[in-house]
Length: 398
Image 1: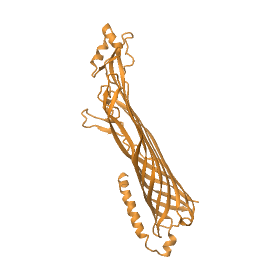
Image 2: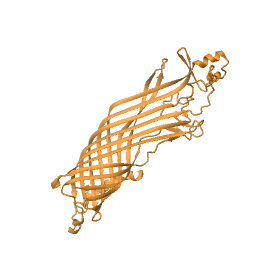
Image 3: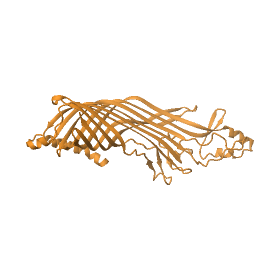
Image 4: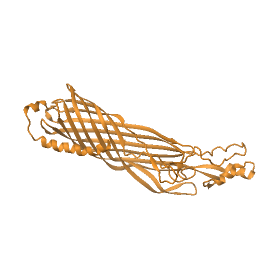
């Protein structure tokens, strides 16, 4: 499907160029009667189901490694697959061939939960969490994860169409108009330590496990929102093949400007000894914690009370940044008049929205003695979103 989508703009352009040339030729009166002739004026409505598959979003909450060397590490990405979403068009054709106004609305929303659990097998990389203290053993690995993903897209178009050329063999229309889009991508991930095989830490009072020291899951959130508006222009052509059957194609581009916001948050954990407010970090393999297994020793019992699990949270956000974007949309399909002014429509459509997302990642972080941090450098990554897939529906002119 994606290979076909790459060729679709070239096919549409070739159809438009050939159509313009053919449109200059004359045709017989018999063919002219067979050609489709639209109503002089009227209200137009079209509803199609677009089986669109979004791509380019970078939905990768974790990695997986096999032998621990990293040589066979591969990303664990979420494929949203093809979703059926309604695309609606309504318009009005002005009398005496003065053009037509058409409003187009498309909305896409998809939520997914993606998880892998493998107790005691620490092979999942916490690529969304900040590397400081990530993983129970500070190695950025977990033996399970669960992620929630949200992708939302809104696309509104208001266009004015006018005939560019017309003949019994082909008809073309240019259009100009207004386009407004909004896009959102959220990824939340929890990284677990289900069976870490840590030294047993017993409470001298109960002779049972000391509460609060079971490894807490690391957490990461990556969020991006974008909203923009701008002008667009394009060309659509249709060619009668049979009396009631036509091939149609279109190509449109838009230049957009808007605002972009992005948020990053991460919470990781580590073990420490709290001596009257002074934290002594305990590094893997936690040998110091292993000394707590003898609750009968009063000296060690005092240390047990001071063992804590500390959380390290880091975040960074950027709000309402100015950003430029673009949209390129193409389609190739058919239109079949099945009854009076009722058409069946179908084909393949692709729409690309450039620079509609921003992902922020704190890169260099300095820890202060009081537990605060200072972000010295941030990695900024922008991404495009592409929707492509087949569509089918009905259209009617009143």
